[in-house]
Length: 100
Image 1 (cartoon, rainbow, N blue to C red):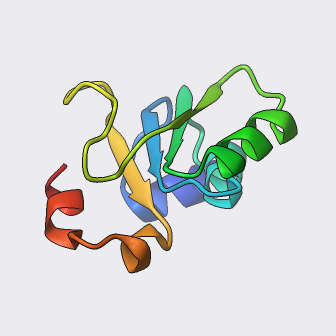
Image 2 (image 1 turned 180 degrees about the vertical axis):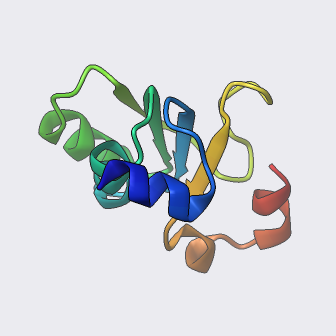
């Protein structure tokens, strides 16, 4: 199943994934289960969501950080894949977030 998900996205397994606007980490969970990532890092502006994700997830392949989608707290080449579930609906400057 993991291989099918990664093939559907056209991505090789073992990538570093960034989940922008991770919220309660539902997309991060699917990524870990089906995307065969080496690492998943979730970023969300809500300290509460990040705290919830940190408590809920016990997986050495991921971390969760507080940060803005419009000014990501990561290096430009740190991740091979960036995903965003619903976060663009809540960002005032969508173009800036997508460019980031």
